[in-house]
Image (cartoon, rainbow, N blue to C red):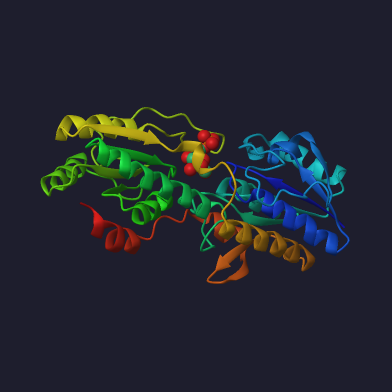
Amino acid sequence: MKIGVLTGGGDCPGLNAVIRAVVRKSYKYGWAVVGIKKGWKGLIEGDAGQLTLDSVSGILPRGGTILGTSRTNPFKDEKNVEKVLENIRKLGLDALVAIGGEDTLGVANRLHGMGVPVVGVPKTIDNDLSGTDYTFGFDTALSIATEAIDRLHTTAESHDRTIVVEIMGRHAGWIATMAGIAGGADVILIPEVPFDIEEVCEIVKRRYENGKNFAIVAGSEGAQPKDSSKLMLKDAEEDEFGHVLLGGIGSVLEKEIERRTGAETRSVVLGHLQRGGTPTAADRVLATRFGVAAVELIKNGDFGKMTALRGTKIVPVDLEEAVKELKTVDMDLYNDVAKTFFA
Ligand code: F6P
């Protein structure tokens, strides 16, 4: 038995822990593992190499992915789909583990529909994949964003400033919501709830009127104004899966808040700091459990499935269910918990 493993989409802390677990568990069964380079691009180009116990030794705490990654979508061009199928045959793969978010697993699901024996592992710092309570990588990103908010408090307070912190999350504001709650942000803006710039400024003003000399605004990069004529965001390009490449809400808010409230304001973009570096212990454990479970799915011939966390258990869910819609922020969490602490 020979299985392939690939990592696609944005990198994410814990990817190496999954790869290691897949290899270690496969070796217990006497299977060989082939590492596909740079996601689906590697299967289009036939770029792959054997993974051994040696090659995965020491990678558990390492960020990024030893296999490299890309946002390549083979379904953009039918010829590339044929190349993927041909390379699966040429490499002699009996099964494939695709580690990724909605885009990578969307491709896996379509390939499964074409008869490819594939299983998925849910990865994204955004935590926006359906079918699983959590994706690995989210806990690490959340810790980094929370630490950033903690650090911004002391500098904002020392300088009597408002600081806007721009947090990753294009279509779902899980990191901003949870880091905002954990870090005590005064306003949290997420893509799911279009904001009114006047209300945001009222909140900031009220905080100063109540005797505080600083404020922290946590905003997802995908947060949108209710009325775009009141606040212009810059045009964004799209990637191969049609997602806009965002960024810039922080600096727009910085200028508007300062102009409308008179409070000296700064902004900081956390960007890829949220994705780099070593995974938290919780992410290492979740990634390891997912990797082991993915090999079990293959052993049972349970293809077209993704490993998922439901409560405390790892269970299989259909890839179809995982990719059919994005898991957006729980509105009870946002409205009942997060908003309680808006200034
Ligand atoms: O999907 C993960 C993610 O980190 C998003 O939160 C973010 O919008 C996007 O990737 C950034 O993509 P890139 O690394 O291609 O700039």
